[in-house]
Amino acid sequence: MSETTKKTTTVLSLQAMKARGEKITVLTAYDYSFARIMDQAGVDVILVGDSAGSVFAGYDNTLPVTMDEMIYHTRAVVRGTGQALVVADMPFMSYQIDLADARRNAGRLIKEGGAHAVKLEGGVNVAETIRSIVAMDVPVVAHIGLTPQSIHRMGGFRVQGREEAQANQLLADARTVADAGACAVVLEGIPAELAKEISAELTIPTIGIGAGVDCDGQVLVIHDILGLCEKYSPKFVKRFADVSGTIREGIDDYIREVKDGSFPGPEHSF
Ligand code: KIV
Image (cartoon, rainbow, N blue to C red; front, top):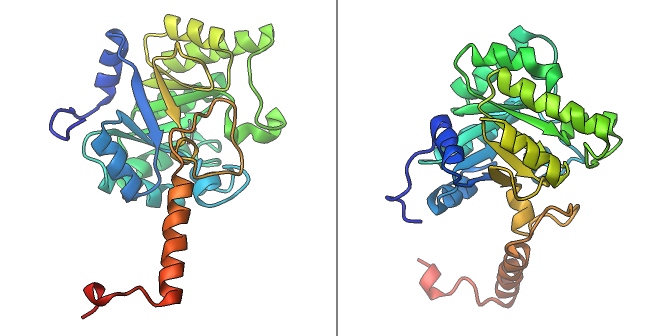
């Protein structure tokens, strides 16, 4: 994708893409360099995910991530982005206390971080929060199904909605977040058939991760698709490149050349 042919993505373009059946591509980024590469490649949406807690900071889950950390990552990503829509995750405890706190924190991600939209986890239980943030003209992406901030309630990272009652709850969650004004909804770790049903019913785009091919778009964590994170690899991840191997080769060569005195050569010296 050349830099001149790709148009800027807005929440309206996401809606239009759904309407014409064009799949939406979403990747996570946490810094300037990755954001720049994926923006130039033509990815539609860059998600500054709180998965930064796991793949960037090395925590076991996303719970320790703070608002200040999310703002820092978001600013770096925004500086590397020209065309993609930048969505920033609201971290755990930034929207659960009360609506005023949720509005203040959503506003910070827009004003201090430079994001174009925010994402938060939950369905029926966060409908009022979504409504309240949308009322300040901040677009909200909802996130239902396997919601990593609920890891302790779920008892681990497990597929959600396999049983009928849970599937019905997820349908209700999807309808409710759409009614509350969400501009899109991430469907994570749910059966493909359920995601298909939700995607067909909602007028807002669905973005799947471990939710099958019938979602309106797909999102993956950049470290997972590039093979940068060996710690944990869920079934829904496809590794599109082995960047760890390439980095390792470069570092091995550097160490060898410094040790044997072949770097720096005369061309790197003054
Ligand atoms: O934090 C994150 O990166 C996410 C995506 C995996 C959907 O929420």
